[in-house]
Length: 226
Image 1 (cartoon, one colour):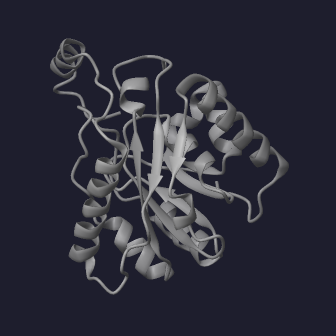
Image 2 (cartoon, one colour):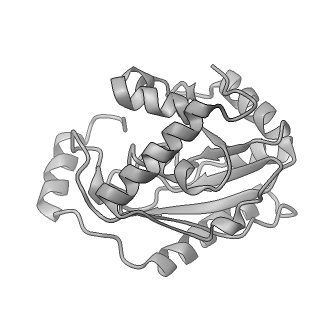
């Protein structure tokens, strides 16, 4: 499934709904949105704490965007319906999805804004996970800039072991585009440094009760990230 070339009315409706929910339930704030180019292809590389991240990051960007999402998320009733209307498209877990990668490159070459999560999955403990290098290959092949983004607070609002989200404070911050003259290792290092800088700007993450997290990690220690 490929997102349409132009934002349809249902995209604007889904974005408006997401922004209203973000303000009402999570007091969402967005910072540095001017760092996202207003036109042309751009890859937004964001940290990943929660299922809330894709719609919240997308709603913070002041232009139509699309994003990759795990294929099984499209089966989650209302949630799947919302992310479809926010121009999500599925990617298979458990190995390189060549079709999804080629589709992402094609979208960027068409001048689209694409959100990806280079950690490869949601955090298990609230900390930023190691970065997978594939994001740099996609951006280079498409010839587009990379804008780092950091999500704040969504691990407390909806951690992986909690069945439903709860009200909390969340935020999204965007850094200036990375220097695309860097090699692959340099882009990974630059992305990590930008995430760290944004983390200092946003401040300490809201805490998840340590005992709940410890019990959940113990229960799921042998289960791959969902």
